[in-house]
Amino acid sequence: MARTSLPVFLIAGLLVLTGAVVTAAAGADVSEAAAPHRFPRLGAPPTPTPHLPDPRLVKPIVTPGPRRPPRLKNPPPRLVKPIVTPPPLPQRTRLKNPPKPAPRPSPGLVNPLPTPAPRPAPRLVNPLPAPAPRPQPRLGNPPILAPRLPPRLGNPSPTPAPRPPPQLGDPLPTPPLVTPPLPPPVVAPGGPKVPALIAFGDSIVDTGNNNHLLTIVRANFPPYGKDFPGHRSTGRFCDGKISVDFLASALGIKEFLPPYLQQNLSLDELRTGVSFASAASGYNNNTCLTSSTMTMEKQLQLFREYKVKVGTVPERALYIIVSGSNDIVQHFTWADGLTEPDYADIMTQRAISFVRSLIGEGAKQIAVAGAPPVGCIPSQRRIAGGLRTQCATDRNQLALMFNRKLSVELSRLAGRNRGVNIFFVDMYSILADLVQRYEALGFKNGKDACCGFIGLAAGPLCNIASRLCEDPGKYVFWDSYHPSERAYKLMIDDFMTRYMRYIH
Image 1 (cartoon, rainbow, N blue to C red):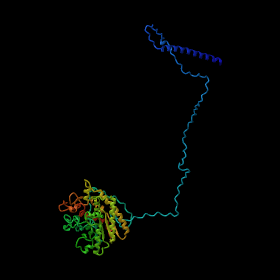
Image 2 (image 1 turned 90 degrees about the horizontal axis):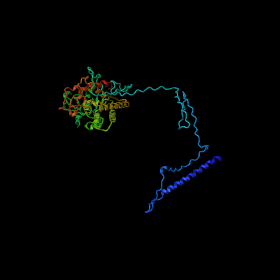
Image 3 (image 1 turned 180 degrees about the horizontal axis):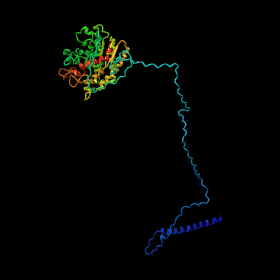
Image 4 (image 1 turned 30 degrees about the vertical axis):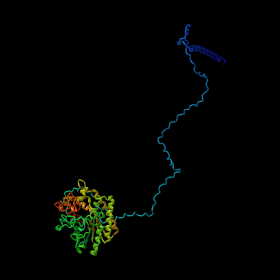
């Protein structure tokens, strides 16, 4: 150890001595260089310029940097935590059929209860047989567009499913077949089956009551009545006889049904029946306000007056009610703010209320006609049928809606009045058949009016100056609202075929 340390100290001493010598020489050079320049004094000898060494030959002074500590041969171990590499994980072998994990319980339930098994239905010792379905009560008339000759009230039988209503556009083409005429109604021998006919409603059954009212809705001037016996304008909205005239004749009562307001009617004429109807009236009183005609309530008041005159109305008298067409036209003409279902409900309520009142007055046999296809009459074709003047669908849909509701309510009313014979008359399908099969039935025109211009003439607009067709019998419609005499005849023939068995 002593031999090793001696050279180290000697080397260190030599290095210190060498550094001192170099530092002294450098200081002398710097002091001479830093001395101020002295200008020579006048007369004094010039100072010799000191000889400067060549800077390229002077070795630059290198300032030693910090000394590094000596490196030990055996350095102490550093306190560094060794990095331990984890052993590789064993590879997982994939099972062919891994076991399914058990379902976890719901987090909200600490101890979920097991789902109880469904209990078997208790067995009856003596099970009762299932009750047989009750037969539905009959309406006493076929549903809308039902087959002809349906069973009467009081004989319940399964109700046939209603057929969809016909979609009336332009009349459907018919094959070139010759349709035989309907047979005339047969009257029972020994006198008429019905002793009297009493009518309420609108112009379809008005035989001239409006002649005695302060209204412009009249038909007591030409060309109305041009085909009536004697060519008389009686107030019937037709070229001749109307529906109730043919009905009274078919029932064997009399040839014409007079209006109640006609003057000087005999007691026999009154007892065999009259018409209380008023053209342009309806179930809705507002319908009558615009035309100043008789409401249904006013017609009922006249009937009470009639009962006082005749004393006793025959029990088997047939009461027929035909109304609703003007209500439908009024609904689409004036904005009443009601939807079609709501308006149909109002019409149905008014109609049922009127039938109840008739029952209260002693009526025992009542035929209630539904609304016809209003959208197919000439005026509504012209107003709402478009350029092709097709049937106005919205009018027909409201008519069908009203007919369905009315038939249902009449069935209920008949069930509560067992001693009264009430039946619904499907006027829609009767007139629709004429409109669709007009050529097969011998008509030339099934959509235009015989009287008037562009299909908008009725009442005072159908007059002596109006355009008139050559043969009204070739037209289904006489004016823009009403059928012709021949069309009425075919409609009553169809009525008798369908509903004669209802009449007692």
